[in-house]
Image (tube, rainbow over all chains, first blue to last red):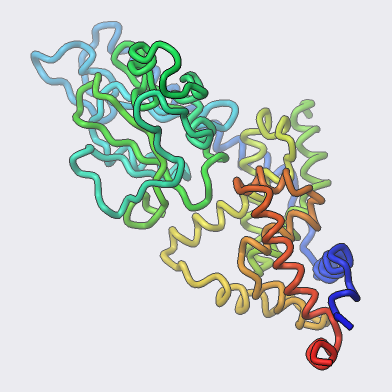
Length: 232
Length: 165
């Protein structure tokens, strides 16, 4: 007799459920404590966002000074006085990264990590071998379809890009200029939205720019998370 | 209390225990799981507009809790082999229960434990589990089949003697 005939899959799962359910569990904490903590974090993130907006507004009014990681340098355009980048928590829990200039990448990296996003932010020339590409975490060349995982983790820019094109279809030239290898730029800014809940547990975010120029093409991609690459 | 807050409170009170049990089954430590689940519910409240429309908000909480745990471990530079960690951490959970099945569960590979936990505590079907874990449905079935087979082996009395007959 095959002993496995004695218990069906459902019986085994039921036995495991009964067994694990018998383990005493602590009662739920006070809901108010969860809500209070969440609200405090929301306020902190909103404060960061407001601070970034205020900095931009002050510069627009013609006041000089330095904000964030950017310092005033004579001879630069007015845009050089803007905050180099801003990180803000959106109402839906996503994280918005607005990059006016790719300055102080280490500071941006620290900010993202502090907000729970394993991240590597660096100049392209300084990318480390410790950062290994995550499967389906990098856009393909030209007009190949954007991997769904990229669209989930980075609603911007990838969800706005064509994802079902195959080579040989569509106007290749126009697609390529806004293709998955290219972040559409709004003026001189790059906006990237990260959905942390869509990030696989063993993956992190990598932002790498060729240079500090505001028009540098930025490619948000996924890499394997590690202490050496993404900090966690 | 706003409607949003009332809705979240109802979800929290109904979902805390199943979510906690699912995470305990995976991580093998009640204290660690409690911290991770509390953190996940905090994140759920922060993103409630999105989470409330999720196909399975409980699965969102469990996945976020497990991701948080993985992140904490990496941050502490204490990425010990999970099996070792679980056996040690889970040792106090059995209490008056027979520890055989408990040990068998925590000897399963993590993916198998995750699939089993999502099935028995959140009652998710294969396709939903696959979407949550971002793996193929066939892979879910494989993990479930192997995990169940291993547990059946432990649950069957005199398994070795009878199997050899």
